[in-house]
Image 1 (cartoon, rainbow, N blue to C red):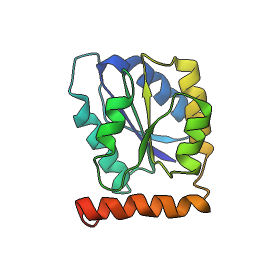
Image 2 (cartoon, rainbow, N blue to C red):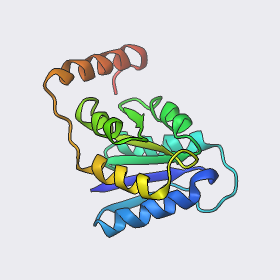
Image 3 (cartoon, one colour):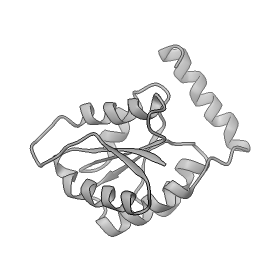
Length: 151
C-alpha cells in the first residue's frame, strides 16, 4: 500500500517510528515532513498529506501532532477526505469499517509508540464494510458536495 505520512515537531519521533514500521511491513511511504523538531504550522502538513490521498497519489494517510485533533480537523477540510483520531482499538476499527476513513491521526502526547504501531497495523488491515454504513457515508459525501462542490 502507498501511504502518506506527516507530523508537526511535537510528533517527529513518533512519525519516524511509524515510518520505519510501515516500511518493514512492505508499504511505500511518502514523507511530507517534518524532518526535524523545528516548529511548523501543522495545517500545512495535514493539507499536503490529505491532498495526496484525495488525489489518489496515496491510498491512505497518517498524521501525527500533539493530540491528533488539529490534524484531523484540518484533514477533514480537504474535499474527499474522512479523517479520524485513533487512540483506541474500537475507534480505529470503526473509522475504517463504518466510516471509510482514509486518514488516521494520532497524538504523540496521548499514546506511545507501541500502541500507535499496533493501532496503525489494525487500521491498515481494516476495510470499509458497507452495509448500513453506506447510506451514512453517502450522506457525508452529499453534504460535502453541497458545501464544497464536486470533489
